[in-house]
Image 1: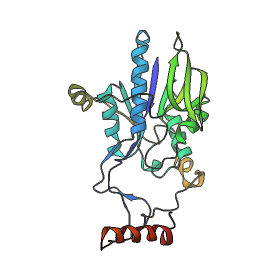
Image 2: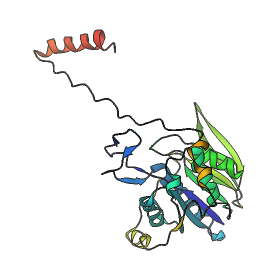
Image 3: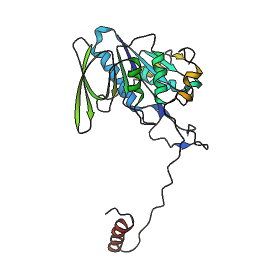
Image 4: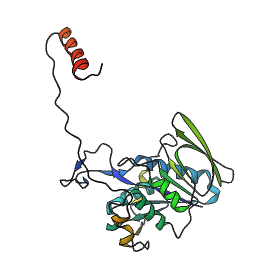
Length: 266
């Protein structure tokens, strides 16, 4: 049995983000990049599926698309327990929209069939959550998104997934192969062990560029993008705070006045 976990390389959530002078992208200088937390959920879900279905001798492949440094998220997946890693990297992949990314991922899977694919519900950089559903559509697979629990059938060829919807919970029965987008609350990612971290540094990674996937520059050009990022703008600076002075009673009255008359908050 073959299991795939998609992982993405994103800025750490606590990183101080700056925009390039031309507004074309964020400035990566000094920014720490990590695996997006929802992809950690996806890797953990894949590991738990493998452990529950031990008789199948399943193997987990982690796949990422990104620059050379993005190989670090594959090392993280290795340290957690993934068996193989695929790194899709090419200058032609830079700036791809979500459908373009899904097309590259689909091209990387054309020669192998995965029994189940796990992805994060969304990445914490652009927060769009479109790659998983788009990939499932391109592969002709059923997709269940925002999954918070999965009950596997006795033969591990069917599953009952629960997902959050507005004001309720939806229960979906699905046959494998299938793509699941994992939400927070389903699993808690394990901490990689020290031996796992050491072994991860030496594991080989299968690197593929556009030519290896049979993709041309014309296919990946901006003319084929369905969405385009117009530009990046940093948030406006916060106005300076106001300091109230006087007796406590006076300051309390002035604060209420400000909130009511100026800020219109009460």
